Image (cartoon, rainbow, N blue to C red; front, top):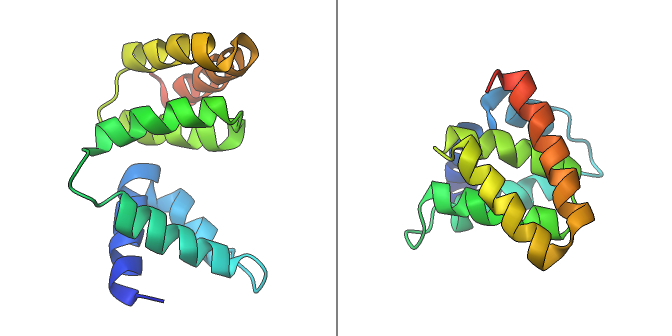
Length: 125
């Protein structure tokens, strides 16, 4: 494991997803899923999320579209929270889901709207 990338990834992951969530994921890791936590933290968050080519807001918008396309509601809700932290507005999230309805299908987009509404309610947005 590259400790520098892991540490940078851990910091970025906490900033985007929230320290409480990330710390729980790391602390609750066991022998089975710890390697996945390390890979996600080092490569996704340490390397990709810290590349200079796109800002965090743009990365969040892309993630919302991709998670809708992949129909991953748990991850989508997590990334809606992160998108809001990264400066994405509720209106921009709406536009992403409307766009995905055309290219990814109505059921996927409807699920994303549903998940986002739950997050908005929880966060008071």
